[in-house]
Image 1: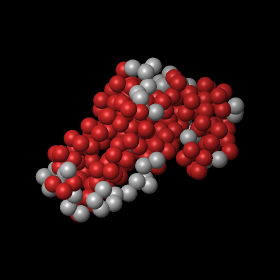
Image 2: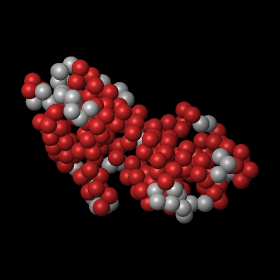
Image 3: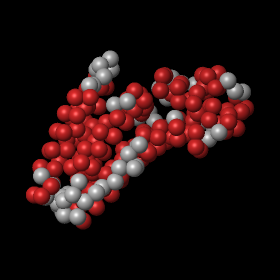
Image 4: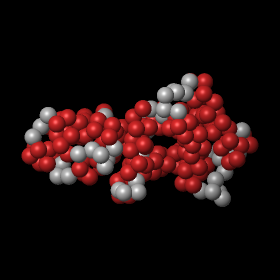
Length: 209
């Protein structure tokens, strides 16, 4: 968790790294503060001084994971005349996140615990998918202003959500249902090309197709 290294130090970082391992291995409901304390090698009083309950630990872990994931795509910027290339870069970066062992583990935990702990699932959505949608929407806003894409009926936010779902849906489903089979680079390229081509044919202006 690279992002945690910037925000937390010492015992707090030690506890969060332990909590990350315990949560992603056992899930939220099955994890206990005793397990996290033992994994971290700290006393209960030290752990509770930094994080008063399991919910706060889980929330902090998920937010840090999502921040680490989304930071990988923040440097991708739209350039005039290169919307297709920008979307391709974004799609590859996003699939690298959601198809990684860590990304799949976080998703499994959040979905498994979502019914019992809806607030925690909401934290994940706002810190991860929603941030990604906002970043894509910003790129699409620039592209629309440059005349490369027509989103007058759909809107940039809805278009960003649609694009993200085009990119993620089949690849993530295949990886979740085939946990022992990692996709090849060729397969990832194919998924990205299908998503980008479909989106551009639907909304790209003539000169961008």
